[in-house]
Figure: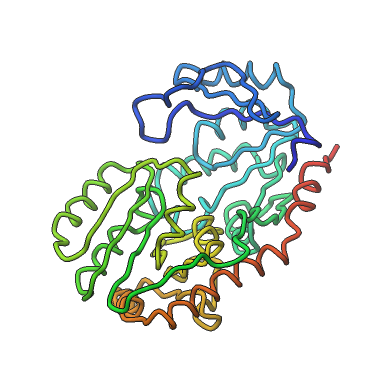
Length: 347
């Protein structure tokens, strides 16, 4: 929606995080046009300070939007263009306490370096919620500009697809990075004590191989649950998987927004999530349930509740989920806020 008003260049990796091979059927290290947006899939040899500096100097963008906190795609552009006052940094929830608690030493050393460089005096920080803005403020108390601009919603279904649920049956789906913060191992443990015909689709991107191995070990011991894993599924194929599911489950340790949660709601798939997201009071509007992680048995009970639901009860939750998604979209002024984010520049 912004390509009519901005010239957009996207610089990204030629592979998913953790992969050893590049995507097939792409050109690397050259700009390609995709629907009037220029995209470069960078090979590993281009992910260095000198190459990124040359790239930025050649394009000379009005704004640099950094969509991460701790990656190469943030560190080098920050060092190259810090004092230009044309950087918008979106931490994407990585400054939440729960996120910083994972591999904390390296992260706090990096954040200490940024504070020494006074980065918060030169950059604009993009938070997607007031909760995330507070997390940012705790790390960068002297930040000059924190813009709260919610994520743009996905396309919302206008009506529910015709589906029927059998009592005593449940098709669940988990979508997220293979990382401790997404808490798949917690979910698998909760499934040990449920009864009924239950299945789980795991759609994930590989990130933490050690954690994934722990999850695989747990999966091998869950004899009564049908589990299907789909690693690195293309995003455009995920909506169909959600439409075929009866419950989206994500016991996350922390989300600044939760794209996958809204994507589930947008097709009328009820959600069972932790209370560490901005999505609250779900059960009161029959869109899903949010629970504390302190009591795993409550997650088990909630899953069992959905297994035991009649079709009529489940349809009520489906309607609540879709209504919540439509309400989020109708109340959204996100597009105008993004224009304001990139059209205002301090001297």
